[in-house]
Image (cartoon, rainbow over all chains, first blue to last red):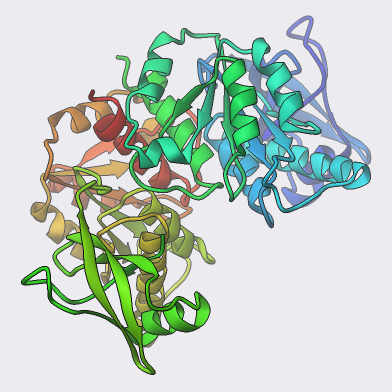
Length: 252
Length: 252
């Protein structure tokens, strides 16, 4: 069933629900849905329900609540993926696949070894495009939370934010090469539902010695993600899948 | 360091090592390597070493062994990913990313709900292309085993092969929707190093009722991969990352 995110919060179960703008266009024109059809509605407070279309007008769709949904599709740990700007369209698919795999939010930053550069205008345009990709992927994967996209100006700015998280991990290729195998599992073991984890990934050339020192000063853990060398766009997906397995499947 | 796969097996440490054909072209023309440069060589028996270039001639490169390598980058469980033919270039990137993440082999089959069709000629051409992608991804991710690509004619042929594996899992969207969380971890818990696991993924529309019955008759396990709905090309990567985490990082 189709899923739409609305800015509204319901105060009573009888409140009218509205879908407007691009989502209205999608529902009415692309999906050609009409009175009596049902969709999922996710409200601004992450509550979600099934709702039935009451009427479709020129500029908006009116719906009414059918039933509240309680199955929580969100990872119990809020994971932020921070990526040093990679080449090409890799960031777009890190956001798309990472959203499917349950990321809470994404941070993009120009790492010392990033080859691409974004000026201020390009940064905002890119951020908006990534936000749109996250929204579509959240709908498609039946999530109730749309990951936020943040852009920072440097690894230094990222280091200054490390204190906002319960744990910080740097995915470190040299750790993988040195056969480091225990750090990720030990970080996971210390996390409890509701905690926040920041995981930092370098661009193609990896993170610089200076960035390593910045993150070390913030008590980041340097972890290997298995003995194979993963591309810069594959490593975040490994991390998120491993977290889902650990926190959602392996704890029965 | 660059890594090349050769068909040879060394019988003594003094045997000459040869790189020929496309790999020779890559080494000599693309990478412009020359006498004295070192590369990794992976032999037909999966043993691998560092080797030094002795000479580069018109049609081949001659090398000598420097040092055997013993770090094993292969997953302890041999995982075969079977994909019902998906749309577009998704299979190419399942093979590329799945090779990075440690898959032992790949099987492509036209599933009942596959929209694309491959005739005999196209099938062989596609298989060769996927094999090339697997070889490049294996080199790039520092693996010593290049996954094999097999094409089958139907889900029925796939079911007939299930007996070759120690366990068979079907990644089943309905299991995910029904909040099934325990099957994958219990299958993993029963696997020991050296065992073979087949994991079957449907195309975009999922596997058919008839295919479900075929795989059920082969004692396949139907598992959910977490509470979010994963795209057909994302689910195999989730499985492989979860297996790597379980068997390579979480067992210290």
